[in-house]
Length: 214
Ligand SMILES: Cc1cc2nc3c(=O)[nH]c(=O)nc-3n(C[C@H](O)[C@H](O)[C@H](O)COP(=O)(O)O)c2cc1C
Image (tube, protein in one colour):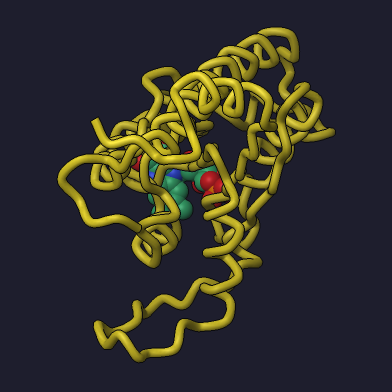
C-alpha cells in the first residue's frame, strides 16, 4: 500500500474528523424568473446552522460560466470567471446541487458548469435537492448521478425532492412542512459529512488507483 509520508491512517482519520466540512451549494437554474434560489437558500441556511459545516453558495447565474468550452491547448488561458469558480469548487469537500427538471432531466446550465471542470469534482460526495412537478425533479438527480460517476464522485442515493414545488414553499420561500424538510436536510447532511470525512481521509492517505494524479 502506498502511504503518504506525513499521514498514518490514524492521523488521517483524526484530521478528517477535526476539520470542518466545506459544502458548496450550487444553484443550478439560471433561467429568468427562476424558482431555484428558494430551495438553494433554504438548504444553504440549514447547512450553515449545522455545527462543523462551512457553506459556500454558488449561484451559476452569477458565476457567468461561458457557454463555449475551452480548447485543448495546454497554453490556453483559463477564463477569469472559470479560474475563480475552480478555486471555490476545489475548496469544497462536498457538493449539494440544487436542480430543477427540464424535459425529464437537469438543465444545460448544470451540465455546462460540470463540463468546465474535472479534478474539482473528483472523489468528493455530491448530494442533491431537486424540485419539479409530480416527480419532484428526481429524474434530474438520476441523470446527474451518472454524470458524477465520471469523476469517481460519490453521488448520494438519498436526495431531498420537492414534488409540486409551487405548493411546497410558502410566501417566505421556506418549505411549508418545515419539520419534515429539516429532517430530510439533516439526513442529507449526515451522509455528506460521513462521505466527506471518509473521502478526505482516503485522498490524503493514498492516490486513487489507475488514474493520473490531479
Ligand atoms: C424547458 C423546461 C422544461 C420543463 N420540463 C419539466 C419536466 O419535464 N417535468 C417537470 O416536472 N417540470 C418541468 N418544467 C417545469 C419546471 O419544473 C418549472 O418551470 C421550474 O420552475 C423550473 O425551475 P427554475 O424556475 O428554477 O428554472 C420545465 C420547465 C422548463 C422551463
